[in-house]
Image (cartoon, rainbow, N blue to C red; front, side, top):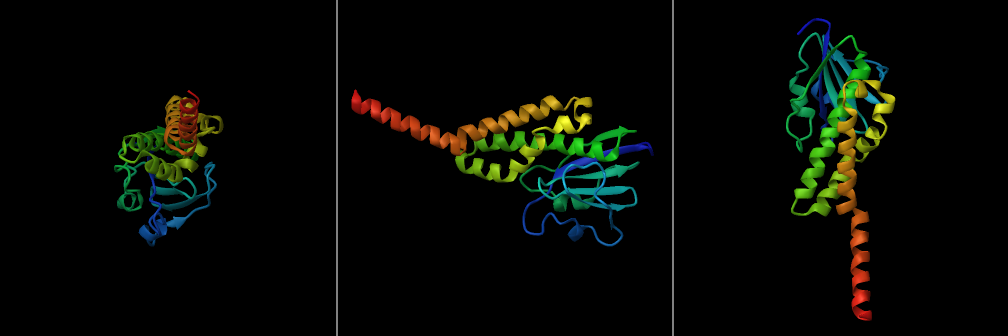
Length: 200
């Protein structure tokens, strides 16, 4: 890895009590830096040597950024959610704005989160309950992805816009099928069928 390269490893922080607090896992020597890196979401940013941790406060989308070194640290495993496998997807760049590039990588990873959890909800033995849990966890991510390519040109430049769009479509379709709207629609169909049976 070259000295002027940037590597980003995005992950989704756990939402348990105190689980996603970076100060709990990153001790002395890590300095909090201003959140002025081109990130649209309010984030906690800590830096030490050539590593930077960005932790999203609303969506939970986070990243470890390595400047001239691999984006790897034991704190990732401690902060990341257990509902997803360890994030082995990384992306590198040279010359791009670090904040914008990290944001693009986190949003692209957010699309993977929506895709995986939507498919898991559909396959679950209790899909309506799984869909409710998915909605509570992923609604902020879905809102962040709604106009991601409009505010971050690096998403389109890297060809990630279509992936994000497909993930949003799958998430919306899962909610329509197993969410509250789907339940109301099935109830209406049941009542309509009952009325037709009585009239017939």
